[in-house]
Image (cartoon, rainbow, N blue to C red; front, side, top):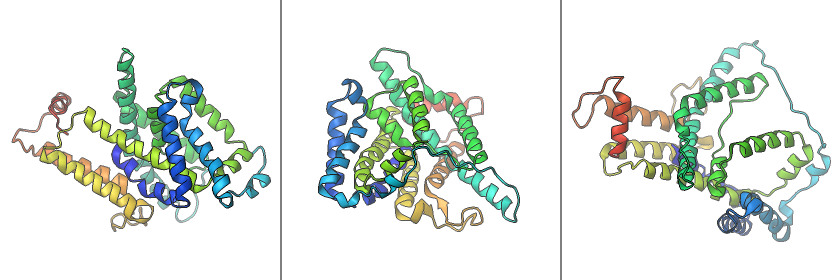
Length: 325
């Protein structure tokens, strides 16, 4: 799941980059060089992607100034309060709307879970390098989903949609190796405050898609590579047919669906009243992967009786130790 979230966004990154390949490739290469050669070099070592974006923006001003439009910047106000709307429960389609949005919130669960496993792996490896105790953040997957649900509740209460986790943030932490909790909380608080600055929002909107595409190729790719790192770390045995089966289904449905169909929705006429555009590819891939793996748990291909509920955690640990899914 972690891999398909990153690789499934490949088409979006390349579409942005195609606005101007010279600018996007220059942005990509400079961002990679910044991230590799100034890592652990103080403050600038913490912002290689921002430096790459600024460099790409300056290159755009020279090579293709027509891609930058400052009209919205002059019209934007300095202070812009958030637009808050409270829910209403009237109208003939209110039940359909509530149910549809609730289902879409469930679609973010696989993404949130994959991202937590990703960051847990990298944080624990960083701790081991520094001879510190592993944090094992992946043990808190349940609490993470509870907090996601609370966040979605607050979003809906104030007129927003279900939230999602941005794997690009995981990529930034993996690139900069900055996993500081206080730094992340401070960055979140600063981002919220900057969201009130209309001029800044308008300035960001002047960034050409080519620059965004160059950055996205790197960041989306790192999300996918972290998924591969998870499989390596857990020693998933790709010579076992059951593991190949689960991985094949998840990869093809998730990546193919995200790239091959508009909006990443599979045109499958199931639950059409809830998903009129089709089933979301990544969530569908997660469900199919769970179902295929469940078949192997119930009907063990090694001919062993399915373990009792109490014994399942120990069995799962033993299977991971020998490379099972």
